[in-house]
Length: 248
Ligand SMILES: NC(=O)c1ccc[n+]([C@@H]2O[C@H](COP(=O)([O-])OP(=O)(O)OC[C@H]3O[C@@H](n4cnc5c(N)ncnc54)[C@H](O)[C@@H]3O)[C@@H](O)[C@H]2O)c1
Image 1 (tube, rainbow, N blue to C red):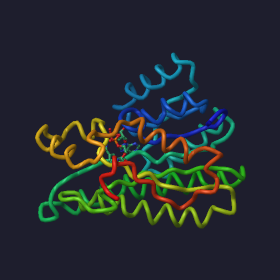
Image 2: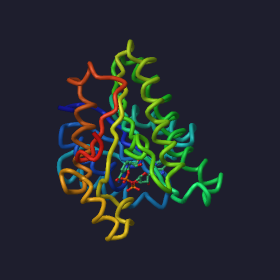
Image 3: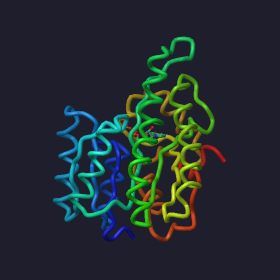
């Protein structure tokens, strides 16, 4: 499905991003496992090692998605290594949860900066490379919190709702250039981000999900692979919720 495609997966040293990187390589893509800081390098290199051991192609590249300079370097290095860039998955994301009353302006801005400004920067840089090629796929990551809001997540929900506006605008601006732009909206997925949720709250959350389980990174990866495929070329500007039926 993704044979000979080249993909950058931002924030892919763990969690959903690592799941997407593994999944894409099994479908024939070469991937960039992106990580933000030196402290994440070992984890990113482990993901790359595992992919290569399984016969896939991957390299690890450091770039903070909120830094235009670092993102430009990552995209340049990707094209140098693999010859092109077909797919960008904007997966990198952070949370800094607290009620609005207790949330500092600094923590509000920090989450917007990584989740929303970061997706803008990577898309801006990658879309131009893709437009010049006449082909590209961008998959952004929203969240059920962006669709519905979530107690204690004003910053995160605002960033993820913003991702949707960014997705639709990019889709309109790049449609004629062969670049589609869509977003996945995960519900409750098993990753280090959600492992931090206390057991009793987790059980209550699962009870609310019609399919009665948490999602796995592969559930998101499968959807991203479809949206990243050539076959999905007539789909753009859309949000695909992946949440076990949690919102309908
Ligand atoms: N886990 C869930 O239930 C869930 C639900 C909805 C949406 N999401 C979204 O899915 C994406 C992945 O989430 P996850 O659960 O795997 O989280 P995670 O915390 O396990 O992984 C996030 C990754 O982003 C990377 N990252 C953070 N800041 C970065 C930056 N500035 N530049 C580059 N990389 C950076 C981290 O190093 C990490 O590898 C996020 O955008 C998150 O908001 C997750």
